[in-house]
Image (cartoon, rainbow, N blue to C red; front, side, top):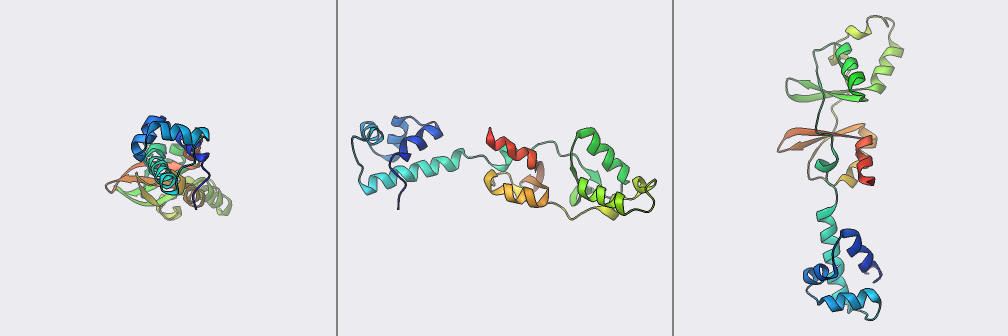
Length: 185
């Protein structure tokens, strides 16, 4: 079943296509697109299907990807550093989680949640800053390719706190809940 015919004009405008561009991509005349959008003509099923397929394929090309919304500066800490280093970097950069590396490989994550939990559980609150990050880090966050559709990442970011973005196996960015707000712009 196809969407309603009046969605053709809405979809075309949302994608920033002219009637001429939609006609060219669909293999029909510009006047036919104009007549369909104005309600003067009802397209055949095959014509409507072709138009909706074009709109759908164009939407896939213009939709945001992980690489479009990620923050490209990935601030991290090494697993052997003390917790005070992670806390200082998180406070200085106003971030709520920080990836943990073993040289250049992602091995974990330190988040506000784990820090708060460890502070509450600790008997020695004065020396908690000296604990090695390796002892309190959580498992590493998921890593997705830069071409992953951004809409697919919202549930993942909500569950995992953040998602790392990679290009050809190399981490190039990070997505947090606040980065997903870029999709609303």
